Image (cartoon, rainbow, N blue to C red):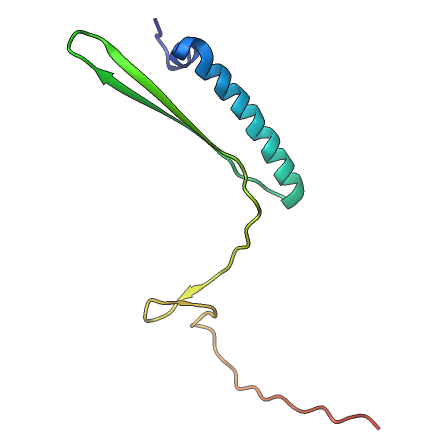
Length: 109
């Protein structure tokens, strides 16, 4: 009988959920460390979803669904701005545009 959440997790599926998630957590930790060494930082996530269904005879069925997100390949980030029409623009629409002209370089003789 589980009186606390950690005890419930420890007992769930005869301890196999706890053992599996411990392995997943250690693997995630290694992947995070490797990616952080390569890129400077890394993100990962472990999500455990517990579902319960109670019946009127006092029986409760529970199901665990666990997902692990390891750091994926490095993705380029791009910054965009929203213009007055609500569209994404490559340049900040608030930035002043200066009139510039290019001067042809004369060959040095």
